[in-house]
Image (cartoon, rainbow, N blue to C red):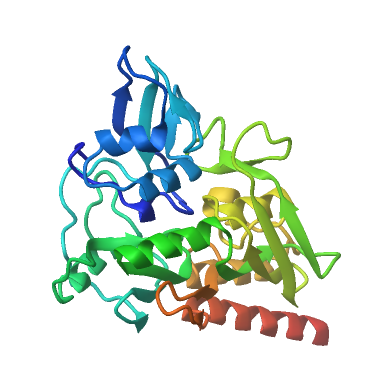
Length: 351
């Protein structure tokens, strides 16, 4: 991305990304007087606004001398300023593709999608096609021309490739800015269903622990309870259904960190069922009988992904102020596995 390109506030609010990539690097001149960084960058980055710069600061996407700063920070001569965003600098523009997507609601300002498991949300190096963003660029190209419409989808948040469920996408500048603020202010209501290994002593609880990249393997996240690394993260959970060896829980996000539910559940020794990255893709609870082993492996085949579904999404409409609420039914693979476990436990009790 060149200095002539604007950066998108949807790129840095509530980001759930695998890495941060440098898009701009500025060395402050020796003769520069003290000036707030939001004002400084407004004069250095074209086609952006002070509001966007402030949001980027709040989300930790603007670094000075390698450290996150507030928008009130005053730049000094010699400061090294970096703008880092969740996706790499685009080598090519997003390619519009007519891919199947499930739109559950759309109006002038936003789109609500029910993403299928297996679909990547945003392109990355070597993978610029077949993503949700490619599908949205195609869909958005059919929008009526207007100076208020975004020329690319306003991605406010994300869910992992192998997680299914609801996403909100902004269609206008105003909607993107207001929705981004809702996420930052934590007024968005999001609940997930997760099938996890093990049984819980309590019916509900809260997991608190900074989430950050694993210090040895940057492909996965880790929990840092002392707060030396990572970002503050809070997950509330409630037991929905017990299967003895597994438990179906509802998770309510207070924050939205990369892999938050997956890594928080592993942290309390309840990794998600069939979550390869966090050790849930092997038998962790249950008997050693070959019949049980075959049953679990059959379930893995039915749902070859982590058992996580973004079930509900609630927010205030960014333009008309109405309360919006959406609920997604469990996809077939998830519901089939749950039914198989119900039958297994039922027959086990009868034996």
